[in-house]
Length: 444
Length: 135
Figure 1 (spheres, rainbow over the protein chains, first blue to last red):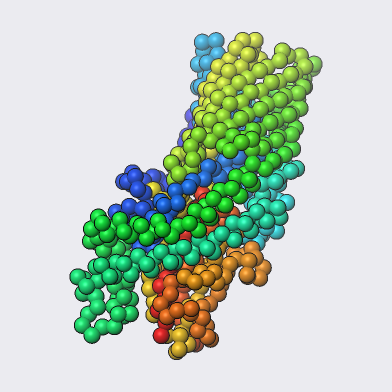
Figure 2: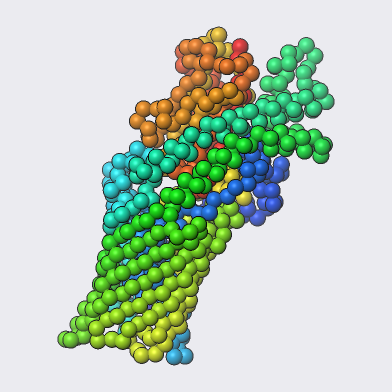
């Protein structure tokens, strides 16, 4: 057991070591001011600062992106923070890791429960096997069907015995029967065309604002800085001014800091006056994204938990539905058939299970930068198996985004009884989830 | 803190803000935009009009989009103009833009831009600009 824990710890350390930029980006955030990138102190170059000033003027935010991609251990693992399975798996690879389970059961503490799983899609496997870039738009468009199928493998806690060889192995697959959210779907591509129509005018807004501000700076500051030089043509002086004073971060900061408060205010007025097309783009983008995000997804799922020794093998198959309800509120429903294959004669159990989860995005993404939003979910599950009393479980879960692609789900569950003993069970759990697609975005 | 928008990140390897292009000598600009994601949405614009959009290219969507400005003929609307490439992140997560100043024989005069733009936030967009004086 100690060896296993050590291997697992090494694995976690390796993951965090492999993605050092995750930590670095967090450090960079520590020094930020409330103006963010729109602050002169934080600018990278003049064009970037203008973009940030435009963003600040537009000031519209999106709610969420891609939070329904399940990377947690599937619900069949008894030591998981997922009570309800969601319909969609990550496009590339997701890792679910439940490090600590805390179970309070009749006054006894059990902190030895751990589970880990890896989920990937047939699309990711095919891309890897054929040497294609999974994020190539052409490849993405042509292989929508492969993204419907995903696989999960993992390990769950040992049950009834501390024998390491009796750890349970998780395996499952999921096939998306209906996926109205795929960006490559023609109806969604038609929606994206709407965004495309607004992109050009929004870009024109910036390319009109920027030279106007440059000319303002040249007019107000040029002479005092020696532009134009004696005998120098105005055009050449302006090129030299932009090159020397508005190109590098340090030069641009120094130039902007020469402005008086009144002059800076006039610069910001130039920016504000030209952002209408940017506002329109942000509005239509938000509208289209929300429309696509709320479309339904229906999956068929099969999961099994297999033990090497005499413990019960579990099977679960059924349908998963995910749909947007209203703005930040989504609903996931599971209806499954559960089968427990006991090695004891007459010990098999079978029956139905129904679970529902409402998840609400508490925060917008802007609060945590590129990270996912803070999500609160409330779930309920009922299991009706033969030879057992019905089991009802409720769960409250908070998913806290730590870095891009890394979330910390914390759950608190209450059940009327455990599967094996007839008394109420309360357990709290937390773990980590990793979404490789998002992690790759922060790599250089 | 993001570099732009809500979650934007810039990786700048080369950046020039202004260039003088001697179009009469056959000089021109070459743009190359590489995309990661489901569907790129971008436009190449100047102060006066939208010049190109992703749907103007054959085989859209694809990973690499390339175009030129003023190759073989003067395409400038004004002797002092600003050009921009605006990129939307609603269905793409990463763009890489390279802008080269080339002579009439396609030789590189100067690499003006080599920048990565990344965002996981659907509503983010970024407009990379360059001011161009023609002679």
